[in-house]
Image (cartoon, rainbow over all chains, first blue to last red; front, side):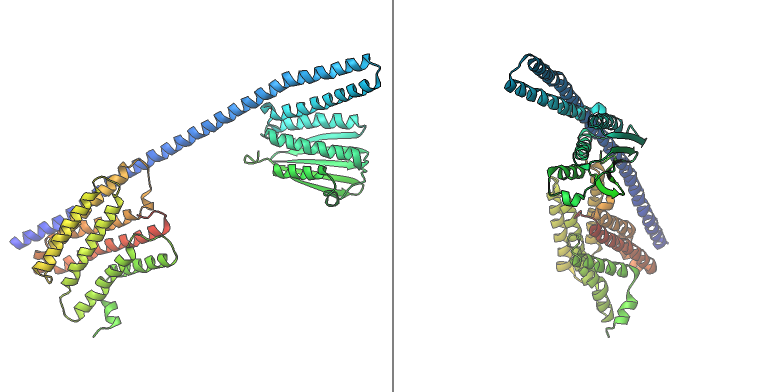
Amino acid sequence: MECLEKYEIIIAFSFFLPVLSSLGLLWFLLLYQKKRYQYENDLKDAKMREQQLVIQNQESLENERNRIASEMHDELGSGLTVIKYLSDAIFSKTSDIQITADVQKIAHYSTILVGNMSEIIWAMNSRFDNLEGLIGYLRRYVVEFLEDNNLENSFIIDDVESSVIISGERRRNLFLVIKELLNNSVKYAQCDAIDITVEGKENLMITMIERNAIGFDPILLRGNGNGLYNVDKRMRHINGTISYQKIDNDMVIKIYVPLGSSST
Amino acid sequence: MLSFNGMIESLVLYNYIGFLALLLALYYYISARRTFPFIIPFLLLSNFVEIGLIYYFGLVGKNNIIAYNYFNIVCILYYFYLYYKYFENKEWSKYILLVAFIWSAYAAYLVFFIDPFLYFYNSYVIGLIIISTLIILFLKDIIERKEFISVKKIPLFYFSMGIIFFAFSSLPILIFSEDLLFGTKNNIMNLLIQLGNIFLNVGYLMTVVSAGRNDKKI
């Protein structure tokens, strides 16, 4: 009888201890889950704070860029314009050939400087950090430049998501690529007209067609000058590609730039 | 007569799990992956005692208690070492060493000076209770530490789970072993001890897997 009681105690104990340990472990798991939940929340908060900091940094950087752009425009731009007008004034008053030539040079370089500075200001101003800003500026430049050089032209904007963000650096590189290509067209292509089409939704595609152009082989030309070398370098810098193709009488140049969030 | 077939027949489930843990630990070691501290020597010894030596003693009709007595001391000391390593940076960790020393002196005294052929449950039970306390402190530390580390990435967690399940399922049997050994419920005792050993060896196996898959040492 006594022996049976002992066994009952042992069995009760054998049952009680594992139950107790299971309850203890359950308690541990509950606390552990609570800590895990808290940790995940803390992690989310930290990420949020980090993102806010990044945004704040970007904002302050943009403000600084805008401030510099604005000051360049106000101070340097007006100064250069004054130099240009003063040069023009001296030019109209003097009859000395040497002075006239020098003053003409001053006026010429002032005009170039004003143009270049305007490009830099445009690239720096975060207000234009989107496709709309880029295409608007390109369009104005292309049309003015080709008309100044008496070339027929068309600039077609096709299916463009104008709000897509594109950084100042990429805008400036793209602009300089187009500028170089247009310069080359005017200087060497001997074409009748230039048609440009811009498409940009997920990626930016600029197609430039030189009508009735003599064409060129980019591989043969690459070693000859800095122009195409710089174009290639700039395209690589913005993760873009450029291709040249002679189709019948036309030279077709295609520029492709990815517009993903990581590439802007 | 020693035979391989005879040894295989005498094996129980937890022996296979323990052997699998050893093979996996060796595989991880050969593959230059991280292994749990001293797990290979420990599992080698464990498999040698649990499979080889116990079978041999049983076969030659000798008392296998002496093998268990020595192995239990090594086993508990290994547990002490692991938890000492875990709590090494704590101020009170030196007391783990002190307790381990006192316990091992007591266990060694029983084995060497009393009777090596007498199974000493007392020292083993006391050792397991101390280790269980350390495991509770270990779990408390996981909860209370500042940074959060997933238990999946802590091999010692699996090890601790194996020991704690073994301890809590086997302690009543070990405490009342005298009554059970001489009573009629010997089969129940064996069954429960085997269940506890399954928990223990699954713990070892999971520890080896976890250490091999994670970069955390303990």
